[in-house]
Length: 384
Image 1 (cartoon, rainbow, N blue to C red):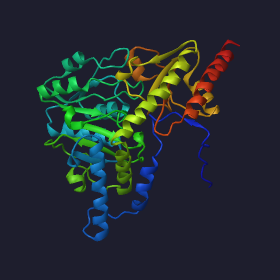
Image 2: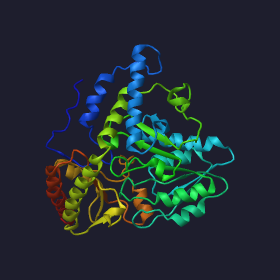
Image 3: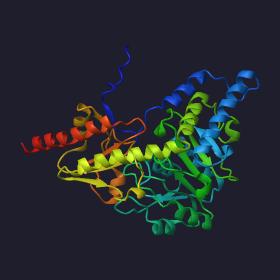
Image 4: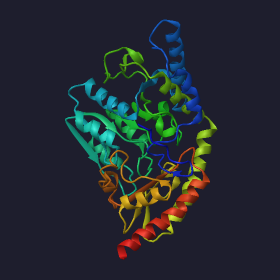
C-alpha cells in the first residue's frame, strides 16, 4: 500500500500547541542512535548509548533549571503525568484525594479520576486563571497531590504556581505542575519554583514524539508506575529510547540561552498580527488574559459567533491553514471544551491558532486572509 503523501509546504501549520515540527537539530542528533544498543549493558555499544543518554539528560536538565539526576525520562508528558499521580498516591495509602483547577488537561484529569478515591476540581476566572484561595481551601488531611498546570493548553493562561507551591509546602502536600504547554516557550526554573513534580513532553517544543520527562524534586522518592527493570535509577522500568531522548536533548539544548527569548518575541509578534485581524471580524472574541505577561506567547484562542467550529476548521483546511478547536485530546468528538466551560464562556465555537519555531510570516499572511473569508462564507450559507 502506498504511504500517504505529506501536505505541501505551501500550507500554513498553526497547530503547534498540539504538536510542533521536529527541529533539524533534533533530527540530526537522533539519526546515529536509531539502532542504539541497550544503555544498561557493559559492552562498548552499551556504554556509548549510556553516554549519549546521559548527555541528553544534562541538556534537558539545563533547559529546565535542575540537575540531571532529577530528570526521569518517559515516553511523553502523558506518561509523566500518570507517573506523578501514581507515585503520589502510592507513597501513602491513607492519602486518597487529588485537588486541582478545573481547566487541567485531560491527561491530568483522567489520570487523577482513574487512580484517586476522590478528586476536587476548583474554579477559575473568565481568563482561565486558577482561584488560588478556593484551591488552597480544598486541600485537606487526605490530600495526596495538588495539580496546577503552568500554562493552559487552550487559552494560554499562565497560572500562579508560586503561590500554590508555597501553600502545598506549608501543608506537606505534594505539588505537581504540568508544564507541557509552557515548556520551550517561557523560562522554567524547576529548582527555583519550589515544586515537587513536573511533567514535560518533547514534541511540543520541537523535539520528537515518544519522549518526555518527569522532573522530581531533590530528595523526593515516589514509587514507579512502570516496573520490571532498574532503568532510570529504578524510577521507571523499560528500555530507554535512546534516539528519542537524544532528540529531546538536542531540542532542549537549542532552546537553552537566547533562542527561547528570540522565538517568544517572534511568536508574540505573529500572534499580535493574528489577533488584530480576527478582532476586525464581527462576532469574534479572544479568550484568555489580555495582558501578554499573563499568557504564553504562542497560543490564540477565539470564539466565533454564528458558525460551527468544525465548519471553520474544514474551511481553513481547504484554504491551506491547519488549526484546532477544543481541547487537545478530544477533538475527534467535537464536544464542548471543558476548559472554556469552566471559564464560563462559549465552549462549543472555539478556534485555537498556535505558532511555533518554524512559523513564517507567509503562514500568518495566509491565515489573516483565509479566516475572514471562511467566516463570511459560512455565515452567508446560514443566512441564505
